[in-house]
Length: 139
Image (cartoon, rainbow, N blue to C red):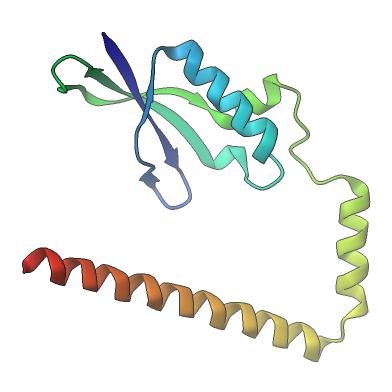
C-alpha cells in the first residue's frame, strides 16, 4: 500500500513545509478544506500552493519521488470555490481604522518600533537556535 506525498509551498518565504502523507488526492482535498475553514481569517490563501511530491511505500518504507514537485492547487482557488470570505468584513476594517485614527503620530511610531524590535529578537533567537543545531551536528 502507498501513501501519496504532498507539500505546501509558502510563496512569501519561498519554501516548502514538511510533507503531508495522504491516502489519495480526495483525502488531501478534505484536509485542505478543513484547514481553510478553520484558518482562512488567519492566513492569506493566495500565499500557498500544494504540490505532489511522490509516494511512500508502507511495506518497504521507501519514498518514490517525482523528478520535480508537481503543482496541484492554489489554496486561494480552493477557498474561492468554497466561497470563503477572504477579506476582513467591513466592521473589522472600521474598528481597525478607528483605532489607527485615534493614535497620534508619536504613539504610532512607538508601536511600529516595538514591533520591529520584537521581529529582530525573534530572528536573532532563530539564528541562535540554528547555530546550536549546526554545532550539535558537527559533534
